[in-house]
Length: 133
Picture 1 (cartoon, rainbow, N blue to C red):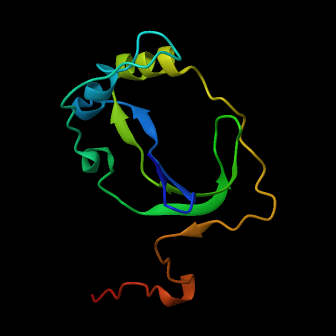
Picture 2: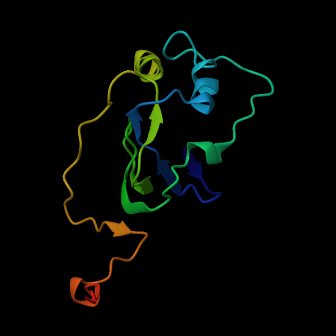
Picture 3: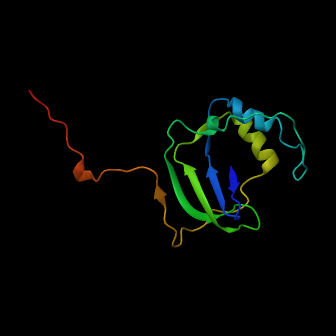
């Protein structure tokens, strides 16, 4: 999901998919994909509940990166969920058929800072459970 504010700043919410159960909300998107790449089709009254694309565990990673398609603009704030959601194998195949494989290889980290949305206490702060006999 891509958002552009009034000043042209971009933010992307990245949702990872793994092979698993059929995803009814994703099917609504697949049913409306154009049959040919680059062709635009209009659909009326498409209702998506975007929350259904969010995993149960909403922790995410945040970093400054770039768009994955040309012109691969830099300065995009990415928020990528840590936990993937499921989609059936045929759904993933349908998405890949129309969208193709990745447009761009994984980029090196360079000097980017990866920020987690959650806190992990340091190991010394985790107390061992007490056992009484």
